[in-house]
Length: 288
Image (cartoon, rainbow, N blue to C red):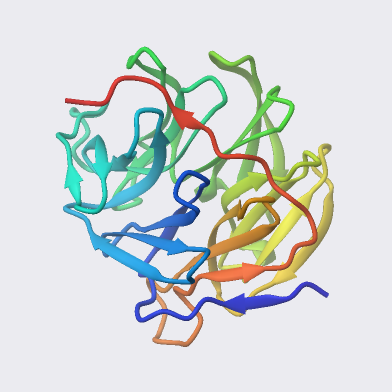
């Protein structure tokens, strides 16, 4: 049975998300979208730090030149810490002021893949975008209620991306520059909750967080359920492997919409018994 440990800290998250291991800093980062805030857990010391953000922040990725790029409600911006500095924000959806960034990751080619969604979750106005290493935006897919993921297979040939509102995870063929041939890969039933953040392990299996499902699950490369690990939080949101050996799994959760409790909105470390893949960095120009 897997061991699940709550990380002790002063503040729980309203909506924890955007899990990222940063080997450069020896730290695990994650966002609280609705606070809004950016959190850092330094693995060597166990210290947790938190920075208030100017608007909802869906994700962060490392930038090749140092610092981070963050996906804010109104677009992307550079972020540096110690001291905190945030650059000008720019994005592909100035015509959709009700939308925000929700989840995103960099790939091995230095691009960012990210999703947008209606902040009120009333319309399917979200899209999947690619921000290339040349700084150009490309709309890849549209019509999302709540986009989550993406996750990239270690072989580089597949990308997984969910529409949580439809309880479906799609699989795309990925060639490094674009994705194509979108196919439904995993469908969640009502008892499963909703597919949320996800990541691939070193064996090519897909780990998925269950919003309103109280667990994380591992699926094999054909989409069959391998196993599930229960967590004491109801709304589990994202997963990332961390540590020098990528053998420490951290899992975020949310407290939004729930009565006050000990575990909802907590950060957990899970002994999953497998290792992950290194996080990639964005190599394109900084906005502004």
